[in-house]
Picture 1 (cartoon, helix red, strand yellow):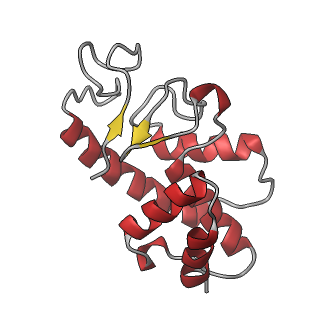
Picture 2: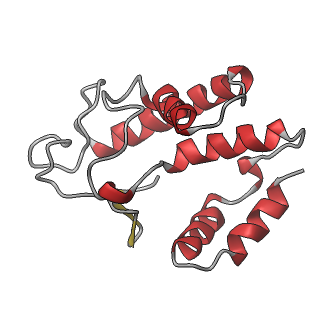
Length: 153
């Protein structure tokens, strides 16, 4: 399971922890990770079946984030306001961000399907996708391009 790092004194975390305050009132990171994964997977499946890709603007993108996370976080559909990192790679700083990984995957899925093609993130090892994403964050998109070529049909 992915482990995120953030400042433990953040107003977005339970006191003395790095666990994000959540609607489920879960204070243990492992338990929150499991619940978040299950809920967002279900919501992504629902979105893939019901969301149309008619007006893919910033508000649409935020609506995807809200749809995925609204059962878990009060701030679903809003931009992140804390800095986080994963596996030693610092994500885009909060004051410069306009997105989220799972939101972006769902957006890409809807975009690809709008072109009458299919994409399956299940066809790629999550570690390979993570490495490709990290390399892309450092300016090398070649591996990420290869990943997309492999999973878009």
